[in-house]
Length: 459
Ligand SMILES: [Zn+2]
Image 1 (spheres, rainbow, N blue to C red):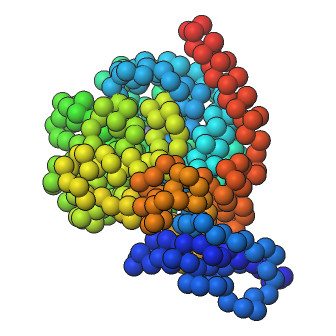
Image 2 (image 1 turned 180 degrees about the vertical axis):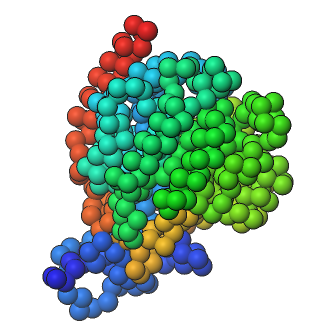
Image 3 (image 1 turned 180 degrees about the horizontal axis):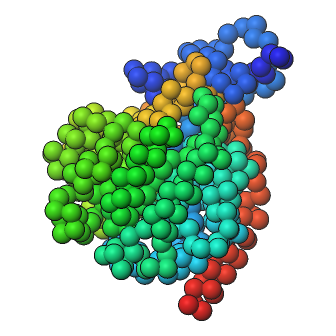
């Protein structure tokens, strides 16, 4: 086998986000093949062989690539609708449109969602896709193809809904699958696409949508299926007061107790939102190592509330960040969520140091890797891990007068991305994607959004 080609990045600040929060004011990173070979202070070691590229990263901060832990890619083509609604009203307004999506729409929307994140420093993305209309084609395959073409590491959370209006749920009857249909299709998706290897670019999780759109049986059997196949479990939990009320009325208990009763707490589970959690819910998550995808902008957009992230971190709950679907977070960016998480949690807790810049960066990197079950492979800059990293340009007007680079990145304006590497391959240069044509995606997503709106208007 040929020796791995090396890329040397030097003269940069580095925030490794390792267990000790090791940082270098001026240091280097050596990439060998798809792995990080070395990280350290000062100049890179002399005499390295097979160096194909040397990057002078003066004026930059290098961090692990950002990791998005909750999203719904298809919503890229239904942005800017139902803009003044809470969660339940927003869902009811949008379900009829979403139930019309087909394969070309899912592919274009996935490209739009992925491109927006990737150009802002995301190296690992996830998509919780749960709308599978009859006859809509191979939606999961189309979404995975979009991620592969872009070169982003990816987890597809194969979602499902089987509790419609006739069963007391929220989605219309025509928008859901059957219990058996959802389980069979989910198993087939795992078998076709899940890669359990260290450097996997594609993984699949089992992901029934939420307590108010999924039967108890689908939750229970979904958990059994995931554990039989050895993959992770994902869903929405404790997002709003309306959901809490729904759970009490239908199941006689709150969401966390309901999840526990159906096998949905555990170190192989992560849940989006977890806004309405009492002390005992947080203790249950910490005890079982259940992860949380914190989505501050989406929670603000839908007036859902503020998750107790500082309390979760103190209790030892793994927490990552999520954009959430872009119908409830139109910007579609994750790097701005570092700042939003910090600001919103200070507002929510009324404590000035409830979350600091380093904790916010950790949520967006190592915390994300933890909840996706990939902390051994990515999420920090350490020798032997996968080469997923970002060069943030901090020497322009926006940041140059802030001395501390991590403070500049988190507190300051969204920083320009000079380069982003996934699996050792550069996918972004000077804020532009190298792997796909952004302008073509802008056109196709506009066209597919218009086509969906036309079809939905016909009813
Ligand atoms: Zn969501």
